Image (cartoon, rainbow, N blue to C red; front, top):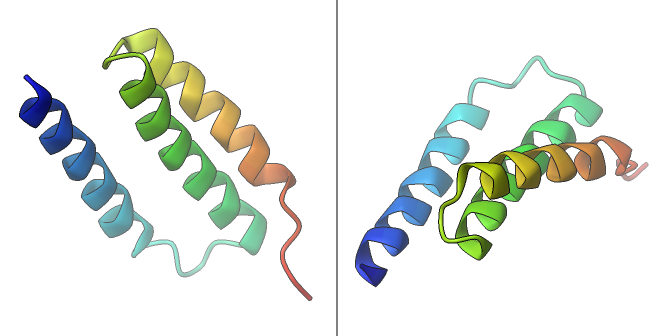
Length: 73
């Protein structure tokens, strides 16, 4: 069972990484929002054992945090 969770988390990270490859025309704030949402979804899913509420909640919180991060000047 642990290997299935590990495989799911790895697949999610790979999907996020490949998906962000198509974000070249996005602003820095948009990119940070997407990265935060993806990371939050993965972390929320892992921490709650893959529950839908944990994944969605993690994505929402991560997206808000990512949106508020100020890019370096």
